[in-house]
Length: 332
Image 1: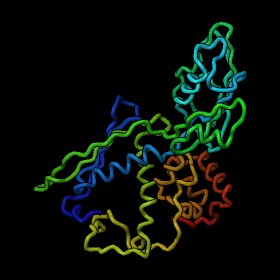
Image 2: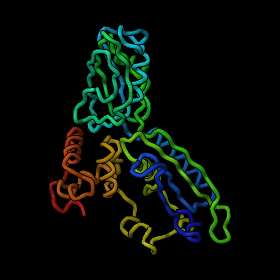
Image 3: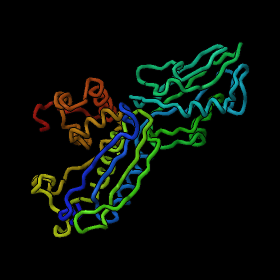
Image 4: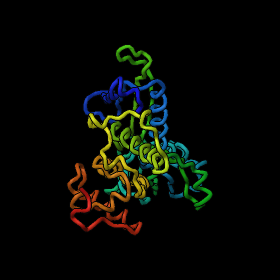
């Protein structure tokens, strides 16, 4: 950390729910005190990662019986095909497996079709069941095949159209990010005679597929995995300019302080579900190399790591030709 932290102390982190009790999707996070300029540096980096790099699920395509393109209407349906596509785009979903899946919708009017009417498997959870998709009039009938995928960031329909141009398949702009809103402010903070310190306040709101606190934790671990590349053995930092908190128990141990020769591949590239990924990161498993040293028994002891998560890890590692360790003492 910055040398100034030895004088002002370690920054404190607090999280407060922004709305009523029981809602963990919207929270305000405060970090203070920070050295001058660090509020903007950290806030901007966290905001960019939160909005662009967290995995989520979204509708990517729809096939409607009797419809060839989105610029048309359906007999007995009030909405146009374009309106239906926009409603499907706004659905809030949670998907556990990374493989694409097709869900269906078959209905006859008169009826108001909502998200809860979609026929989904146990791999997909609908987070907003009351969202309206379309209104069927008397005699109206629809038959839809909807493709749901798990991904990161934003995927425009035009890009998919070039690769998969099938008659009758309507591609939809996919917004995978589970984070709906991120705002941050940098206020002034004071410690003793120092009045030029920063106080970072972040307002984070998610769609419910993960909590706001999980999103912040995920983003910070992702940034950490990239920043560690700058700390390779070939780079030396002058110790007199770096604060040392080892005496307070906040620094690295003697073993961890030595250069790490072993390769480090961030675990995020395995595209685990947020629950599985958070359980691994909370247990200190941040790389693929560390994960392959774990045994099934050690993983089962991790907090929040159940049988479903273990199956996901086995399957994902197996697809890459990797496996968990069979040695009982492979990981402390």
